[in-house]
Length: 108
Image 1 (spheres, rainbow, N blue to C red):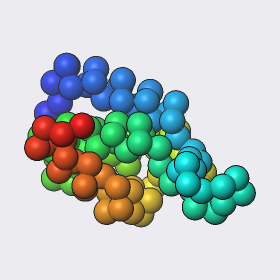
Image 2 (image 1 turned 90 degrees about the horizontal axis):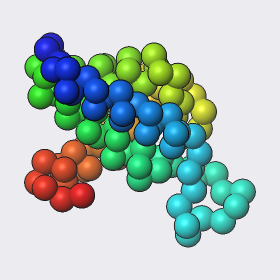
Image 3 (image 1 turned 90 degrees about the vertical axis):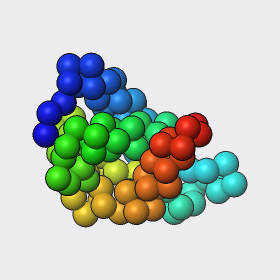
Image 4 (image 1 turned 180 degrees about the horizontal axis):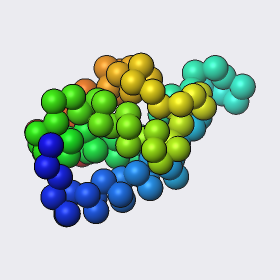
């Protein structure tokens, strides 16, 4: 995998977004005390862009790269767990896959 200096700078920016927006997020239609925590839109967008960078850089398993980057930065899941491969795969299947498709089609 070969990551350009420009992409590495962008990854650093995206990690900061993930750090800033990590943790519990309740959608507006859920009341306080709800167990329905999820990831913020900003977190999902940043993680999706990170996945795209890893994928376009020739990674054999971008989910693993994303998981490693989030863990190294100390970023936690929406319920405060370590962003291991299992949590990152779940994030990908439930949130990132659709966002990646939107980004690649030019939608924001």
